[in-house]
Length: 174
Image 1 (cartoon, rainbow, N blue to C red):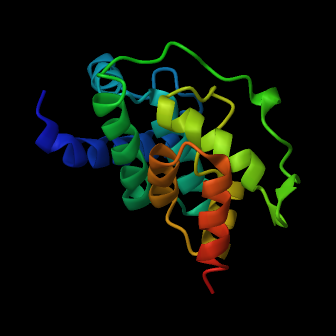
Image 2 (cartoon, rainbow, N blue to C red):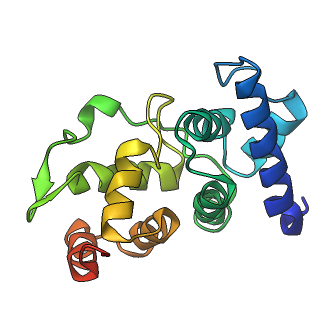
């Protein structure tokens, strides 16, 4: 595997997914050729990841390829270096996540975002969830946090309380 070429190939696949979405392809299934799907899987990613980025980019103008690449570089790093290149084999139940309106220390969305980020990091998000969705992006934008930075923090910090403290220390970002 050519690890050095990952960013270039990922950006090309992101562009192809956006193009295919623009021509009416509305599911992750068959979005990319099988060889590209295999390449994604070998890097801890799935066609659903590219579909979600393409759909949101087409409909909302974000996240663009730069943010998508940054997020997926953290996921890929975790896949190779923490999971030994092996998927966990688990998928979380979206209904077990805290509600979108739940708050911790006055910060709404954060109780949901932390386990969602952990599931993204581990490759355990169901197709119905996207790390970096509109709600996540609003949270990150309001707080001046890069989504990949948050994902990396969740990798380094197993304590939810310390993640909350870091977010509070970061302030509003404005």
